[in-house]
Length: 317
Ligand code: XMP
Image 1 (tube, helix red, strand yellow):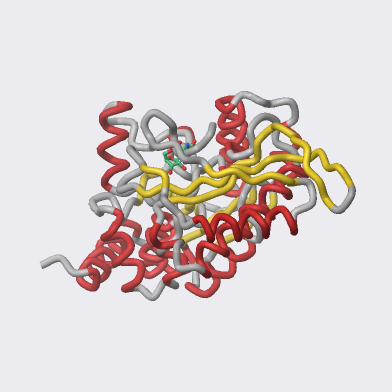
Image 2 (cartoon, rainbow, N blue to C red):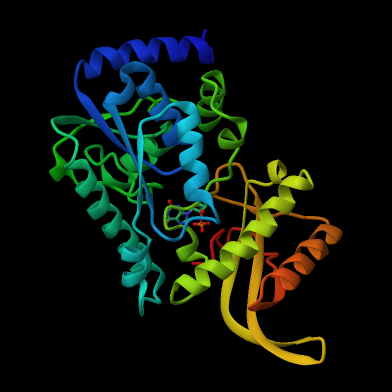
């Protein structure tokens, strides 16, 4: 019988055999899959697991520090790398969504490889690949290419000549969560919504700048905290705010404002392939709208996205 406890026990034994005395490097994203995979590997080999978590400048507000703190609580050996400025430099003048994704993928690989070089004699690459990723990448890329280009941490090139360690390869998401809880990973981390690898860069329509990131982080943070405090967070599959590249007129006191618009998005879904817009209560939406407009200077209008997938997508880019 499959139980989370027996899975943890057996997997840790297998990992010890597979890895022996070698070292493993692994890109961590702050997401559920990579965290659970890293925790299993860490149970097997301790600090011979070298996790790397990159701040690409388009994480959520305070996310870099919070995720690093969680890794510390779990006892993972992780290096956090602040590469924000590197990413902001390259976002300059990039307005096409795919161009932005390419910048993020490429810089991430550069930063990761640079860090990986510092770990002497590394032989393995840890990955949080789960069963649906395996099926998807086999059908899309053929059996030899097992890293999804869309995967949260971005595909790493074969040129690194590392063998893969993928302890979650045969698990579905709900099993991954159970295994994570079994190992004592905080429930906050286990129950996080999915978050795209390109982060807020694809939720800022058009060019991404540090100023726009700060605006969106502030609005998004108000929205997500409110979802949690109103017990709505766990009822939606994914939620976030989108900064639109339009300014509109507003009024504050007796002054006219001309500021940005933010769209709120929340969807219910099983797997992200199809999704329905979440029917959040009007009172809740009104509360979040007021909080954002009253507290985030630079945003004077909030709208709610009532489109379902298909034909709309979850992300706006
Ligand atoms: P869409 O917008 O295609 O999103 O309906 C479906 C799910 O995929 C996530 N998403 C991405 N994740 N890199 C990722 O790692 C990406 O480029 C990317 N684009 C979309 C999205 O957040 C949703 O969960």
